[in-house]
Image (cartoon, rainbow, N blue to C red; front, side, top):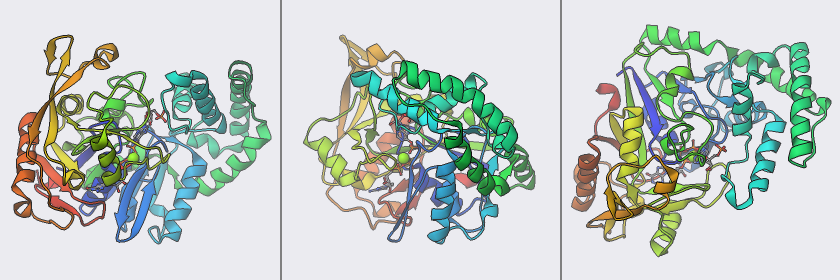
Length: 432
Ligand code: GDP
Ligand code: IMO
Ligand code: MG
């Protein structure tokens, strides 16, 4: 395979960053193509923990080209700060390895304020967004009023467009949301500076990507969020505002379908987590759920919020597989299940006396579903130092085999701890 898509197969935070970091060893190019700094992708290298919000996780290996393409919404302040952090941590010798699409839309301060104020207004009905302005930025893009990275490079044009947008957004913030608007200068000054700092990175990333495809480079596409947060196919309205399934690899980069052989790898934890509101059929509000939070360190990488936890949901996983055309799985955090006996897999839902074996798209149905579990023997061993499949306890291998059987997907990679080396490559996806 020349290209691999790393797709979150649950509600986000599956461990996509660490899987990308692992596979980057064999890749030359890594691409972020949707979402924004609502993402928090964690990589642990030795005793160093790095959380990336916009720059592809491939940056942590020397020499790799990292693209932030048109489908991403970019908060330039966050990007500038992230680059500075990477430099001071010794991961970025040269900014030349990062390229930012001139067509990527900008997140402006008013987007963030609208996001936060709207959530406050919703009260108990809130979506539980990350408060980063993601939704409002994609709204402006869709209504053809957005400002793009390319605009940053032309200060006079930028000023004109910003003035027009500000008038509308300020009126909305002040009259509808009861907040305080922004002055033109308040935004213009810092954005002029971000423009200057980012100028050297801006490029037509679609053409760069095409050139890499032609060269035969191995390319990783780093998804953000998870399939069940997909704007169209997720648990709407408790979703994010972008397409998180594999389709956006094409629209989000300008790569044509069929231009290179691509394999979609779905990343899933050995259990399930969710941050924010919305239905979650296998959620555990009991000591087992608390234990998953503690053992798995389940606090958000972006907002620090406690994640909701539950058993692995095979229906949700199969739905994600169908939506993205998954060809294999990367199973993370299997170490967290040690000491739980039995371990459970949701294999069906009960809904008003009916047995459902497919994930229902209708939120009203989903919120009334009771999972039907299959129990498997647990294991007590600490898995953190295991590096070979054959060294895993039999119960873990049974668990893997059962997940493969129920999803019809091979587990290609697994991780047994947060540190870079705590992985087992069962089958190298690039070799398929
Ligand atoms: P992403 O958004 O999909 O990249 O995932 P996050 O980084 O938000 O969340 C995954 C969390 O689990 C991070 O804190 C990782 O360091 C951690 N993690 C990843 N893989 C493993 C694993 O195999 N075992 C354990 N214990 N932690 C892991
Ligand atoms: P990574 O890439 C987990 C969730 C938020 C909220 C919903 C909408 O790290 O897996 P938004 O700010 O996008 O409008 O919030 O989506 N969410 C995530 N949950 N991981 C993420 O990213 C997420 N990005 C957004 O918690 O429920
Ligand atoms: Mg995350």
